[in-house]
Image: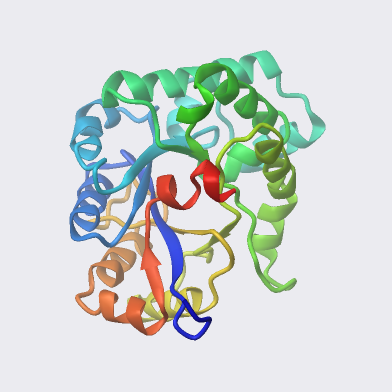
Length: 278
C-alpha cells in the first residue's frame, strides 16, 4: 500500500467503565456501534459486579481491560488510595510499599476476573498511575508472574506526542512513560507506543469535535486515543459536563466519514499490539 493511501490504525479506549451506570450505558452503546475498540474498568467501584458481564459480552468486538486505580473515591474508601498529588509524590519519593502495591494490583485483577469471568485484555491506569514509580515495577512483575507469555494483557503506555508547551501532557510523560515502555519491552509485554486524546475537559461539544479531528489528523505510531464518554451528566462522575459531550461526538452518524477523511481505522489493541508487531 502506498504512503498516499495508507490507513492509520488507532485503538479508541473509553476509560472509567463502572464509574457510574450512566458511564456504563454510554460505553456499551458506543461499543455496539463500533465507535470504540476498548474500554477500561474500575473494579473497585460498587457498580462493577452489576455491570461486568454486560460489557464482557462485547469482547468479540472490543477489548475490556483493567483501569488500575489509586486515586478515585473508590480507592480512598478502600483505605489505600489518595489524591493524585499525594500518590505522585509518594511514588516519586519511592515511599510506597512495593509489597502493598503488588497486593492491591492483584486484588484489582482478582475483582476483574471474578466478575468478568475472564482475564483483562489490557491494563492501563486511572490518571495514568500504571506508569508511576514503584507501581510500574510492581505491575510488570505481577503481569509476568500471573499470566503466561502468550496470554498477557497488553499495556497502555501514556507517552504523549505533544508540543513542549502542553503542560498536562508533559507531566504525564514525566511520571514514567519511557520507563514503563522500557520495562514492557524488556519483559516482552505487548504495549502501545503513544497516547492521544488528552485535554482539560473544558469546552463545548463543538470544541470536542474539533479536538477529535485534530487528534485523528496527527496520530502517532501505534496510538491509543483515550476518551471519557457517558450517557448523562451524573454529578457522581468527575468531569460530568464533558462526558455527554464526548458521547455525542463519538455517537455522531458522521464519525465513519470523518475516519475515512483522515485515513484512520479503529482497531482492537489485541490486534495492533500483538507480539508479532512489536
